[in-house]
Image (cartoon, rainbow, N blue to C red; front, side, top):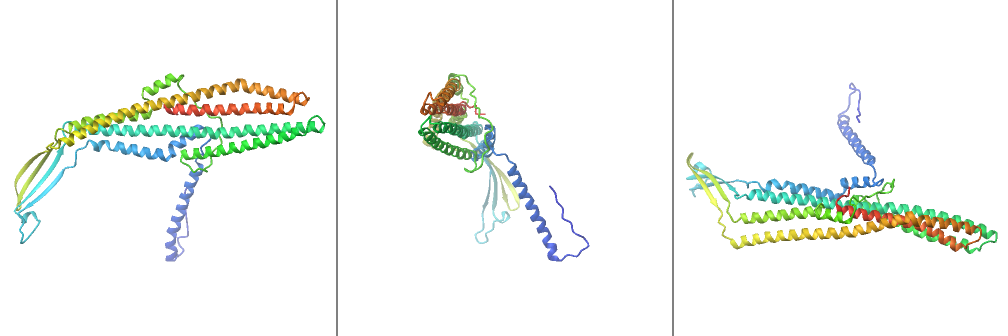
Length: 438
């Protein structure tokens, strides 16, 4: 977007007016920039239409993931310095300074020595230090991936609850409409002297009870929206798009045994992170053992007298490993850290397998309940209601029987919806542990 400001070049302008023109142009430019940014923000799609929009928003906007990504890059930036040579040292020595006429000029003292020293770690210590930093960086990256899996699972959990609450309200509203129809039928029968007035009153009481259930479902929907916005990195009261379709979460493995085998192979980022930390600890043990052997420092220098260089010198320095007890304790610390890392890896694997077994049980049982409700209970209860309605209209059953049949039919629909919610929640938990969240 471009704009132009034009004024007659022949007209004389005052100095004050000339000085105000650049400020006016700058103000207009800033206004256009702010307006453009606001337009971009307004054009950004609101998440909530489907699970894909939730995942995409979370990966880009979640502050915890951004922080972990920065830590991952920071850990990768430590790899090169870990194996780099230490900075060289330069020294300047002045000898024979006259106390009566002190001077720091090299030509005004007896002798001046210039020296440069460089320490060289030997025995492969630099490569080992670089390996330790590389494994630690990989562990940081895997930890970030593990947190991403957890956050995606939490987002899917909240989104399923958000969708479920809305669908439950739809079912309850349909139930309220059906109860009102039954109330009208009861009113007509009462007017004809074929039913008691109590039937209409019971229908009104049932509507009030359903309204209470609707309020609870709406509260659950608000809680799910707040939880979903929190994991997405948005305000708790930020608007969410209405779900366009029912969410689908498929489980890749055909059996729990296959899923456990995948965990055993170490495919989950938490296991990879613990394995990387164990590898880093192992390399650190080797590094501490190599520290038994000293490093060397090489130096070169020259000596100046007056304005002339009179000689050169070559220096070799070696660290004497005198503190043997401290060295042994450092080696012991490295070995214990390796043992701790290996034990932590086993604990992580056991925890993942236990969580996977529990999530698999929830998912499989909920799937069986949903299938049973859809294929058997729901058709049966619908047929029972239709039969009770026809019988009530001709006076063959009482109003209580009709109301129970109606509650059974719509209750079965709510049960199907609840089973579908539990199935999706279990699938989200299984996918998060199985490592196949996307």
